[in-house]
Amino acid sequence: MKVMLVHHAYPPEGLGGSEIYTESLARRLARDHEVTVLYRSADPARGDYEVVESRRDWVRILSVNTPRWSGAGFRPMVASVTSTSWRPKPRASSIE
Image (cartoon, rainbow, N blue to C red; front, side, top):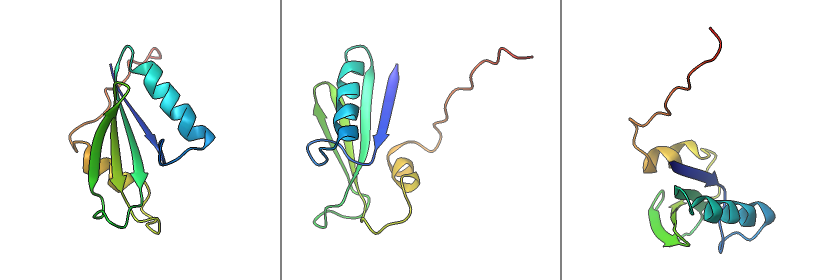
C-alpha cells in the first residue's frame, strides 16, 4: 500500500513531539508499505514551492519550500507534488 504522511515539519528540521512521532510512524509503516512524507520548509535560499526529495530509513521524504508568511497552507503544496488526476478510491459502503 502507498501511504503519504503530510506534516508541517520533519526531522532534522523540526524536532518537536509531533515531528518525532511522524518520523517513527513513517519508519514503522515503511517496513511493510511504500511511505512518503511531505512537509514544508522555509529556506530563503530555495525557490518558492521548490521540492527536494531524499530518502532515509526506507522513507521517501519530500520537502516543499514555502515562505512562512504564506497563508495558502498545504493545498498548493500537495497539488504541486501530486498528480491532479489522483483521487482516493471510494470506499465501499455497507449502508444501502
